[in-house]
Length: 102
Image (cartoon, rainbow, N blue to C red; front, side):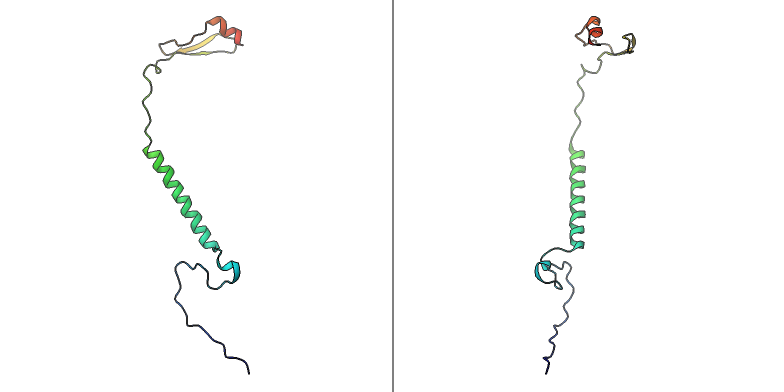
């Protein structure tokens, strides 16, 4: 005569089913795909929050006022000057050394 099947009383569903009830062996302790996806999205959101917080809290320093009026020389490939800008010439090289570099 077969033994009667013993059924457990139905348990209410847990919000986080870990360790998983319906699995056996090592699969019982491994997280499900849904749990891994939720963890990944949570970590992604945390990283985005951390980057946003770091971006919002870092202040930009004021530029050095002596560096703003630097002279920029724009020249053609043959060495003739196309345009200059700024009022302070901070270049140490002479025009002779410009042609020697080319």
